[in-house]
Length: 423
Ligand code: PLP
Image 1 (tube, protein in one colour):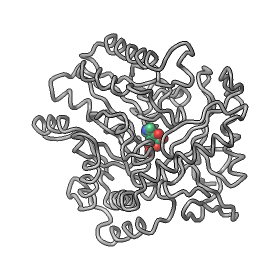
Image 2: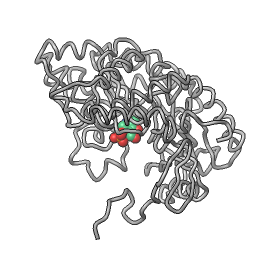
Image 3: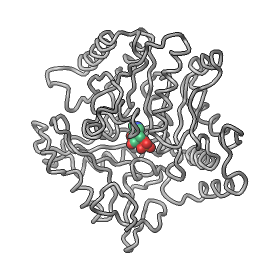
């Protein structure tokens, strides 16, 4: 029998037959409250009329135009809007079809930047343990999620690793926040020196860690320290905002709240809020100018680069976020959501931490609140919680604990920005 390959090869998921506002309905008539926006994607909820209209209108005019032949107003307008809203001189935008493609693009752009400068020996990226940057081979190599990497390890490029900024679990009680942060920066500096700064292309991190840690924010000053080290050693800072960007944390770019400007930013998910598959890479002027005055081309490209319908959808999403003042709503509703979660689960014996920023919220599940001991990963507690939630008509995004016992199971909540207190 011919079959669609699902994520789980043994159990097919329910069939989504319609989706509206905060809800998705399946073929058996069950309705689910979308508390995770799928995987932090559906920031406007489902079937938003403005986005549907923009897609329809773009389809009727130019459904597709290959980027080797044409540009389109939708793509140009989206690029201008993303650049206008970005910090510093992140003025250049490259449009792709999703988060992993955005990361691949960022890696190649960063590498070509140094090649064009006569530094072809630069080949190393530094990234953090317990990070996730996507599932294609370059992005998978960059990420530090052991479970996802393991079967493909022989195919992955070599990436140097440092500790994540994961205060809840990794800061010893005897150490204050400032010392903890300083220690992480010393570790990063040592790693740069070990590899040799002349061999390093860039350091990549998520401003707020999503899929591997569950909405973990950095400690104060961490990203400023990262920026300073990248400047000191002439390496690029790449911010992966695929999950945390596009308003999810209450500012268009999550890194704005850290007061630094990365050299390259990767976007996906919330960019078009799930209405079309789209991702983007923003780059600072010095990067693109080096390529422009060098070879004159960025040696990259996919068939669906700057797809006009995807661009029109993303543009419409971004316009609604601005028109309806949804960034302010994200901050306010995020405070309410975390307060409600603390009221409900703050004393729960198996909820070790409730954290996050804006409408990007994580709950870490532990066996013991005092020792923070995680559940046995073989229990697959996160999967059981997801299944139970679905049974109850609720979508949450689960993540499992690691085999090395260094983190617990997490539940990520990333509801649409239109969520009300009642939702
Ligand atoms: N980077 C981060 C931080 C992500 O969370 C993800 C997906 O979860 C990706 C990259 C990859 O994006 P995609 O699944 O759209 O390829």
